[in-house]
Length: 212
Image 1 (cartoon, helix red, strand yellow):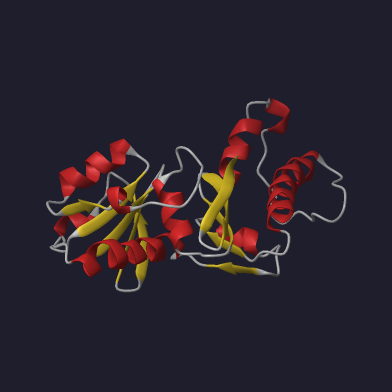
Image 2 (tube, one colour):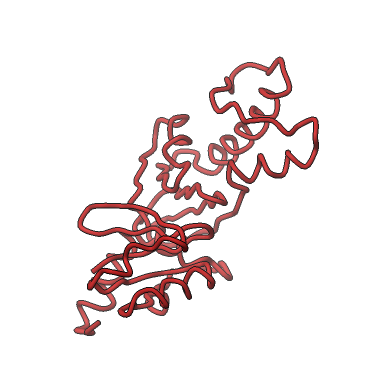
């Protein structure tokens, strides 16, 4: 059984403790005989997977969460299923922040991902520069590159800090490890979405005798 989280840009896979990502143009799993259990936020990439692999199972109908949030992405639901209490930060193409309390989803919000900040600022020629991710967030910048980088990074960090307060923060996603460096009461877990998927498989499929 291979787990697959289809994101906005890549297909992320988990199998026997190994995690990797692939683009739609180079899917190695097409040669696998394992069933692929997937969730997806990208219809085009989903079609690519279904076309490339004969045995796929969509886990989406089995995912649910105690929340008033309308339109919560299936990837966010999966990550939240893995955490009973805490703030979940999934830092990928977009940065999603969700708050869980006693198994209830209190709500969440979305920020542009780090790469998206650069694209937006790049529309202004004078601000089209490489981000300095090593910029100090404790002192005022003294040049344009650092000013742009500081504004991007500090805005993300302050939003997370203001949301988390005393709650533990769980980081995941491509930029999650980088962002986790700025916080003490946190954990970086690249498997968070997959852990949520596995929990759903156990509780909603395996335990009920559903054969995949």
